[in-house]
Length: 79
Image (cartoon, rainbow, N blue to C red):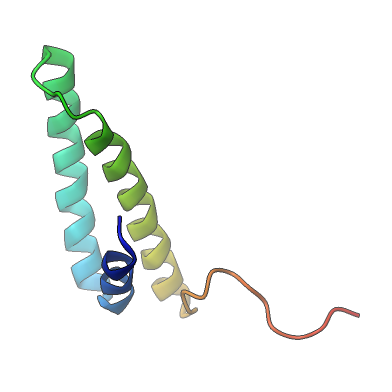
């Protein structure tokens, strides 16, 4: 996944993220069935789709909590 695709995910709202998540999960399911039947040649697609699903779920959780997608870095000094 390229940086501009990650930025596009950050810009989406909760409804769009949920829709995209369902589409990716369905694509992953289809790819797994194709792999089991020997039709798939590009195994990297499955790995990439899993990572994309994890990123989408992360952005959904962040938007549900009202947080920002800054990578989990805390601001301020430790005492």
